[in-house]
Image (cartoon, rainbow, N blue to C red; front, side):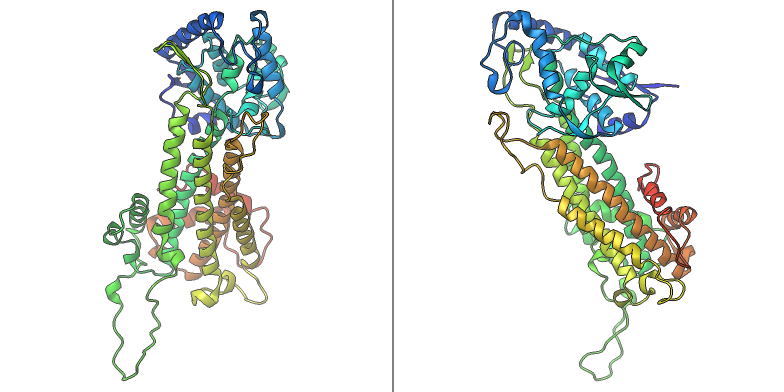
Length: 518
């Protein structure tokens, strides 16, 4: 049975976009009140175009805005805008990214500030519901005046030009429209500009990134909990009293989740179990007990707390953006104004996804350092070198696999540089400071993909450590379930074996949205 999502311009969320992008059984409906706003906006704009100069409706674009266009050429003007800007190049964006961008664009148009017609709204709604997804090449936009190039490819498909993905096949848009009994849309004055002016591509991609980041963070916390168990850590590093003395919201929440995960564990130690050694007259007495764990173990809330706070801030910015008018000019029917400005500028989104990208890089570095701890016998003093469960020297265990985590973490460090500060003037210097928002979002998704790989290596390492310790019954319920799940798809490495066919299964396990949440 199909379900539906009703949009009104104000109620779109990251969770909604994530669910919608993965479920072909959900259709989108339009709230009647939103459609009425759209109608009123269109009627007001049409009157203004007859008597006033309205950028993009009866003028040229960018530095050519001083060219006033004859009313007989206004529809051709919109078609020319779309054809001239649908010039992206590179690999097509994933279908989920395209659908997310279309959903965000539809919602922003439903605000009733863009001057589009109800007919265009219904046309875009039909494309979404039939999952006719325009081919959008990866490269092209600078993120100001929004995602002009990416969104132009959506507009091009609506008019029956360009290519689309339909039922998993890449085809000409005109052929798919004919098959579905849909007429190509003829853009009315300003409608082409309204479709491409704005931040819908970067926002849609960013929304899916946030959903993935939330999932990644959940796994990172679970792995941190298991790591604390395996080293028999002191429990005061996650104490509520400790973290209340430094009350950052993220830090407190991560510590709370760790305590919840470890509540059923029998492997943590109490600080009062550590006793003073007997007096023997020596100035210094060495004890075998570790008094404090390495930072990658002891400081999990302090490292992942900022990741959680950054994610919360990014989600807030993106959900504000996807329920905002990011067009230019704004058609304000309430005050009877046509407002020329820069709501299309992508810096809010670009800055937010850059910050989330940096946070994910740090999360991956924490994971990689813990992997190194468990694989390096010289520092953990307990586990065999490279978690070798057979004959160190003859067999190599995870020695080769560690390189994957190390190299991937290093690549992420290069990708971490904020992209939104790479502003290069363009468009005849009309766009003299730009956001690079869509590329920033795409770089962040690359980092997220890499973090999944790093976490996969850590999970394999932790599973090996559990098999070496041979005490799974003392683990927390969460950790026992985790080890059971991973062992089913990736058995412990006793004798060296080829891993290339099995590693993607571990990555897929981490990517599975049904797993990892705490």
